[in-house]
Amino acid sequence: MITFLNIGHTGRIVNGRFNTDRGATNLDKTVNEVDCVWRYVMKARSVLKGDCIIQSFGDYQSQYRFADSIAKSNPHDQVVWVACHMNAGQGDYGLVLHDARSMAGRVIATDLGASLKAVIPSVKVDGSSATNGWSRAHKVIDGVYSLSNNLCGIVYEPMFIDGGLTVDTDRLDAIGSALAQGLINAAS
Image (cartoon, rainbow, N blue to C red):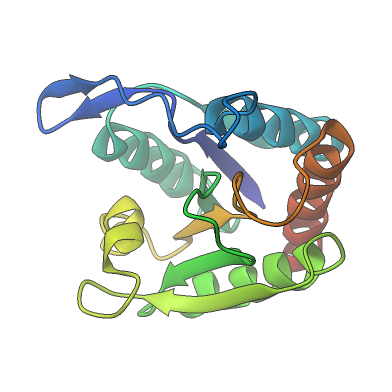
């Protein structure tokens, strides 16, 4: 499996303009989404090693096209583009979404959700679409489905920075390890 980990909330070009939203912070302003995402993605990368590409800048369409070029060059490999985010809004669950039209996405999201449950007590795994309750998150991966058959998109939002669970380096490292293990499980 070849994996693209997109670090969300770091600023990117949206609709031709640079989006400077650097992510939300928790109530006491000591923790922000960007730092959390970087931490768990770097941990996942240290476990995955090989075929793992980290993306942090550029609009989503450019990132999809690059992932698609890799998928076309490796037609016998599964390629997964994971939008790595951290949620805000005082929720108490982790969220792993796949495009509802994607069978491969569903399988990978299920493995990611199962691994994440070892770290986060409540995890929702669901298919997203432009019309269901996950339509906002769906926009992040909507363009992936129409590309190569061996490419799928996932939205990974493992926890809320302002929820009931403590955000610390141990939990973020565990989330990163869970992300890597879920991808390893999906590849086997």
